[in-house]
Length: 115
Image (cartoon, rainbow, N blue to C red):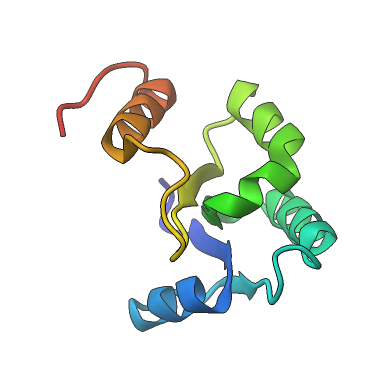
């Protein structure tokens, strides 16, 4: 990834607070998931148009709001941005988180990586 590529996070205040403590400075806080459905779509669409974004960390319960956009990205030939769904404090959407990320990596780079 280019040195100029940035990581952007989209999530609730709890997720963003933890990432800010880790040094992340590009983020969007969604106050209320249900009321923020359109806000998530608008922010995600805007982030996708930015050329310097390499990774988008998306709180996984927001993924259902933008499934059509995620599908287009994952089927496309572009390498960036990589969209990573991050579990919320309410738990993971996927029961086998290790299997999910293993399949995610295989889909992204084309081969298995032993974790």
